[in-house]
Image 1 (spheres, rainbow, N blue to C red):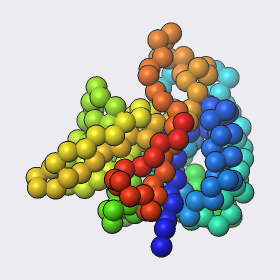
Image 2: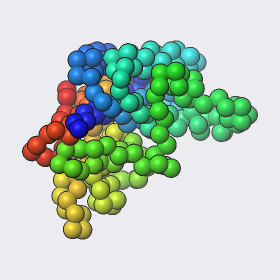
Image 3: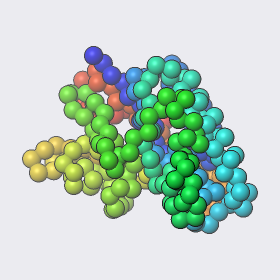
Image 4: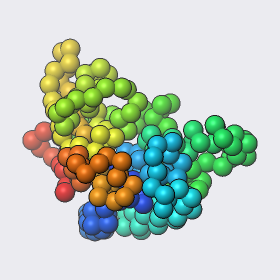
Length: 241
């Protein structure tokens, strides 16, 4: 049985690239994947950031949520039969930290970000990868572990390097977001061949929310990845840009 899985990296709604998202929705509509996984940081939750904020978005949490609900609804409409899973990134964790630090009573009454985004009615499964490992099948009878990428500290000057370092530490194939870079590195960890993937991003770093980076924008790459178990030549994903 062939399984096609689409792995969607950091979107940072509402600071997403509208062009990239339109292409993604078109792709999902045409290809009808069996499974979709969001790598986290689908939402930016800029209004909840402890970092420097764009004044236009400081008090606009509801606008962010509205944009997030609209995006997730588009994905579900484009892929009505797909299993959709959503792992938490460090930007979704902004909600958790904000509630725990400022209004803990809201946590006690069940005010959670998945509920605010209407995940249940869209049949989108939230996976806590701190408690449950998430795997995707690849070709050549292999599998890859899906993470956001912030769970294990580290960095690399090479695209794919942080993911590969995690893969070597864990002893398995790993696919992450978080770095916003696009790259794949493979090698041997112990006696086992492993690969690490950094899957790009779908944000638009020309928007004002990213002005804190200054005029020199980083070399981030807009892309998403596809694992197709019918692929013959290697277990790696195909990147779509």
